[in-house]
Every structure is written in structure tokens, then in C-alpha cells.
Length: 110
Image 1 (cartoon, rainbow, N blue to C red):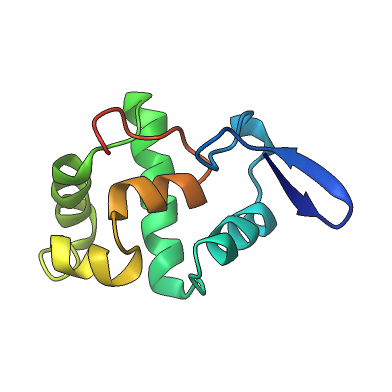
Image 2: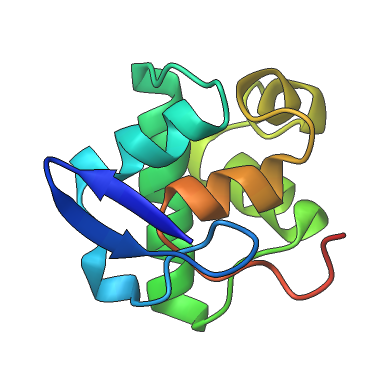
């Protein structure tokens, strides 16, 4: 699979995740989000950057429970709720947000 970005072919795996994490840019994120029918807002970007910080710290993409706990720790209890994350990245916030953030698929997400 590929994502076509202004004539440049960005390699994706069979599930739509970046093959090369270094390919990620904000424009790539917009393309990945569009493929998921998500229009990125500042709230989405906040979670995307939070996920990237988590990945830099732990070298893994968080599953849902870890994402909720990390979001609560960093952004507070209002945003650290699964229902909030689900409203931004349906139907699977950890999986979809990780994909848009240019990270690998969380290991225990279906």
C-alpha cells in the first residue's frame, strides 16, 4: 500500500501504518487522517503529539489503557477518558491515533 503525497509515494503496511517511521510529517498525518475520515483539529494534534512523546519515552505505541492513563497524567482528567479519545479517533483511539501519529500499531490492539 502507498499514500500518495504530492506525487511522492509513502510506503504503508497492509494495515495502513507507515513502513518507515521517519517518513512522518504533519502533511503525512493529514493524509493518514483523511484516509480514516478524520478532520484533524487542535484537539487531535494534542493527542498526536502526546502519542509521539509516549513513543519517544517508551519505544512502544500505547494500548488503550496506557493511552488513557498517559493522557490523564499529561492533559488532565477531562481529556484522560476513553470516551473523549473515542470521540476524536473512532472506533479504536489507540490504533487510529497511533497510525496518524506515524507510530507502529499497538501490539495488543485488534
